[in-house]
Image (cartoon, rainbow, N blue to C red; front, top):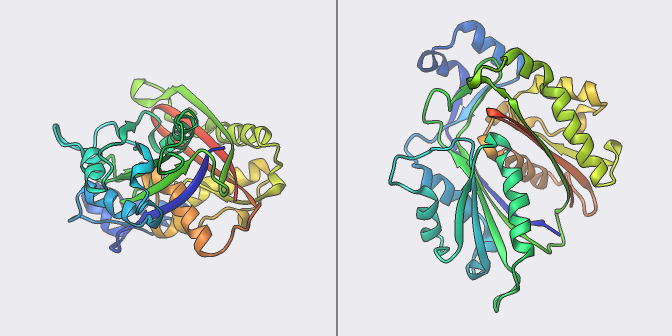
Length: 312
């Protein structure tokens, strides 16, 4: 059964109040107030002098379980929100693999699901590992990386919705782990929400929460788990208002949604799930046998709504 063997997160220490983004992003005072007071977004993380490969490598270097197990890593999957993150012929993923001693692994990128891509990467990693035989060094592993730079205006904020932080995560996935086992994965890909293709942003906003509620319900049913049985929900850090309204819609108490990182970091692209997982572990919020749900939404060329149920 697909499992998360180890998780590491790197967030830059530099904190940037969202008010300082007004001029460079051409945001009005009203938009800034909306982000802070309505959506609960107060600051983001930035590392202007840290290139993308270094961002990813710092996350991976935090995986103590990777040291000495490099030969067991058969696959490296890089989940990212944007199809292009570096100019040709630069390849940050291969640079990181070489630096980590993983040049032997099959490395590739997953895109087209925007900020829901990390959940797809976990699913793909588990399926690939299930078909891999054990090696002389032990059962095979996959490394899932996330992390991006807020390098353009579009990569720094979503109008009226969220602001992005720079950061990265690294996750070791196994096919037979005994902890943080994946019980279910549900998703819905909605091409009709392609705003660039003429879709109505108002319709997307209107159907956003019902669509996310539907995949959460399917994930729970597939895991034979009730909403009340969940110890914790690890959200995507888009904003507080979305989760307050979703909680009302599905009957989810907000005290079971880990929302603290929304205020302090904002939306860290595909890394939100791992940022929140690390916080949950640091605060001892998960005990053996607890079930928890991870949810994410990616919007770009259409939209992807995704949810996973794990058992700690």
